[in-house]
Length: 470
Ligand SMILES: *[C@@H]1O[C@H](CO)[C@@H](O)[C@H](O)[C@H]1NC(C)=O
Ligand SMILES: *[C@@H]1O[C@H](CO)[C@@H](O)[C@H](O)[C@H]1NC(C)=O
Ligand SMILES: *[C@@H]1O[C@H](CO)[C@@H](O)[C@H](O)[C@H]1NC(C)=O
Ligand SMILES: *[C@@H]1O[C@H](CO)[C@@H](O)[C@H](O)[C@H]1NC(C)=O
Ligand SMILES: *[C@@H]1O[C@H](CO)[C@@H](O)[C@H](O)[C@H]1NC(C)=O
Ligand SMILES: *[C@@H]1O[C@H](CO)[C@@H](O)[C@H](O)[C@H]1NC(C)=O
Ligand SMILES: [Fe+2]
Image (cartoon, rainbow, N blue to C red; front, top):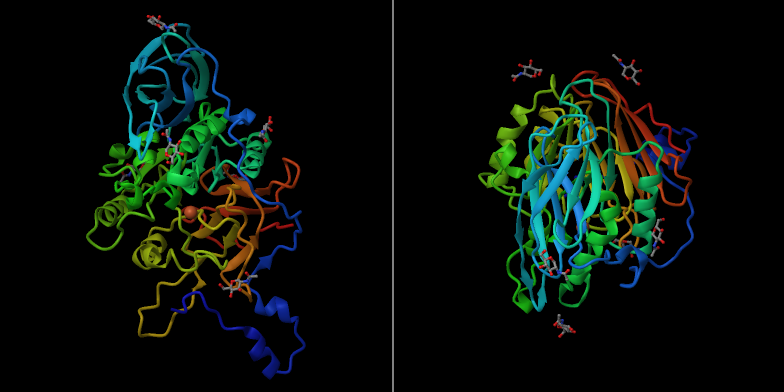
C-alpha cells in the first residue's frame, strides 16, 4: 500500500505563508495538455488492404524476423503457408555475393477451439556476418516471396544503434497509424523492441485466431525487414477454460519464436539478447517471478553476467509497468517490482520499457527499495542508480486510450499523455543515447517528449534535467 502515494508539498508551503504556484509544486512532472480529436478506436475490417493475402498458391504470409542467437549473427525467419506445408527452407544471400545459401527449419500447427492454424514455419539462419544486408526468399516451391534484412554491427561499447519501441499494438485504424509513423520516422529504428500485446485476437468470440493471422499480415511490412524483439503480454495468454483452452500462450508460442536458449533461459517468456551496444533483458509479467521460480533464478544469474564494458546499455522489457500513474492496471506491476527493483538499482539498469496501460508515461529516476512493510518509508525517492521507467502501451489497439489519470501527478512521473504513438531509443555511443516519443497526430519528425540518456555505468550523472518536452 501507499507506494504510489506522495505527500503534497503545498501544505508545507501554505504553512510557511509562501505564494506558490500550487499545481507546479503539487504535481510531480508534466501532464500534457495536448488535445486530440476524440474518435472511437475500431479494428480494421477483415477485407482491409493491410490484411490482404499475398497472391499465388500457398504463398508465404505473415513473414516475421527476430534475433536468432545471443549476439545477432543469427535470425529466426517465420512465416505461414495456408494450402499445404510446402518447404520450411529459406534461401538467402548477402548483398556482397550472388551465391544462394539455404537454411532448413520446421513447421508447426495448432488447434484452438474450432480454429486450425496454417503451417507455421520457423527457420533459423546462422553464421551471418555482422553489419551486412541479406536478401532472403521463403515459400520455395509454388510461390516464392523475397525480402531483406540488415544484421547488426558486432557487439561493442561504442556501436551506435537505433531501437524502435512499440507496445499494445492491436489492429485498429490507430494501430496502422502508429506503424506508419514508426516506418516514416526519419530516425529510422533498426529493430523494434515490442513490449507485449500483439493482436488482441482474444477480444473476439472464442479468441478468434483468424485475428492472429490478420495481425501477422498487417505488421509484415515491418517484421519481414527488421527484427522485432518479442515480450509476452496478457493478450498473449489466451487461457480460456470455458472453451477448453487451458494451455497458456498457445497461439503466441506457436507463432512467435525467440532465442531463449542462447541466454540459458528455460522458457521463451524470459530471455536476453545482446545487440550492438545494448544488452536487452525480456521479462514475463505473466509467468511466476517469486523467489525460487525459474524466472527469478534466471534473472538472478543473468544480471551479474551483463558486461557493461561490452554492452554499456542495459535495457529491460516487460509488459506490466512498475511505475504507473493512470487509473488503469493500478499496481498490477507492484508484486514484480517488490521482487526485482533492488536488482535493477544495484545493476544500474538504464531504462525499463513496459506497455499494458494504453497511454504514454516517462518517470524520473526513482526507486522505492527502502520500504520494508514496517518502516513507513513507502515513497519512491530520486535515485541516480535507478532506471527511467517508460510506459509505451500506446500502440493503438481496439480497447482505446487510457485517459483517466491520478491527481496530483506523482513526483516520480516526469511526463504523461494519453495519446497513441511510438518511441525511438537512439544509442550514439557508450555515454549518450537520445530518446524520443512521437505521437500519431504530429508530423513524422516531431518529438512530443524527448530526453538525452546518460549511461548509468559510464556517465552516471543526472539526466533528468536534459529533457526538452514540448
Ligand atoms: C467456430 O465457432 C463459432 C461459434 O460457434 C462459429 O461462429 C464459427 O463459424 C466457427 N468457426 C469454424 C472455423 O468452424
Ligand atoms: C505446387 O508444387 C508442387 C511441387 O512442385 C506441384 O506438384 C503442384 O502441382 C503445385 N501446385 C500448384 C497448385 O501449382
Ligand atoms: C494503413 O496504412 C497504410 C500506410 O499508411 C495505408 O497504405 C493503408 O491504406 C492503411 N490501411 C487502412 C485500412 O487504414
Ligand atoms: C567484458 O567485455 C570486455 C570487452 O569485450 C572484455 O575485455 C572483458 O574481458 C569482459 N569481462 C568479463 C568479466 O567477461
Ligand atoms: C477514474 O478512475 C477513478 C479510480 O478508479 C474512478 O473513481 C473515476 O470514476 C474515474 N473517472 C472517470 C471519468 O472514469
Ligand atoms: C557520444 O555522443 C554524444 C552525443 O552525440 C557526443 O556529444 C559525445 O561527444 C560522444 N562521445 C564520444 C566519446 O564520442
Ligand atoms: Fe496488456
